[in-house]
Amino acid sequence: MIGQAVIGVAWMGKARIYMKHPIICIIGMHRSGTSAMSRCLNLLGAFIPGPMIPAAPDNERGFWEPAHLVGLHDQALRDVGTTFHGYMPVTDPVPRGTEE
Image (tube, rainbow, N blue to C red; front, top):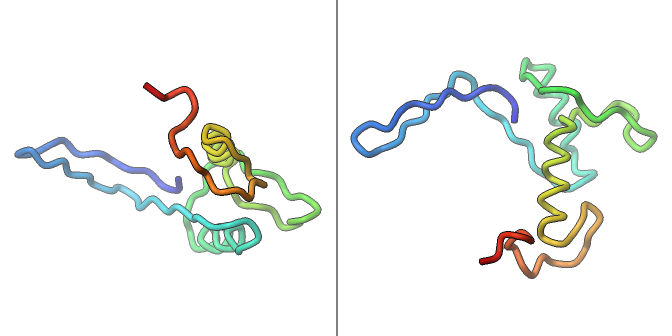
């Protein structure tokens, strides 16, 4: 999540959300330019919460991704029985441990 949101109160049965700053969410497959897009938006003034994933041999300029969000993503994949490197379709989208 990039930015901050201010949530308004329900009014006449309709919830209203007021944005103090827009939230920008960059979604894409690995090696699809998400790091470059994150960095471009950062250079244009978007805030990226840290700590970020450090640079690595396969991405020397850095990933520009908040480590905690990557951790949440990895956990969500584990919860449905796959990983970042998984190639099989998710056949049971209900996270493990939440069945009735």
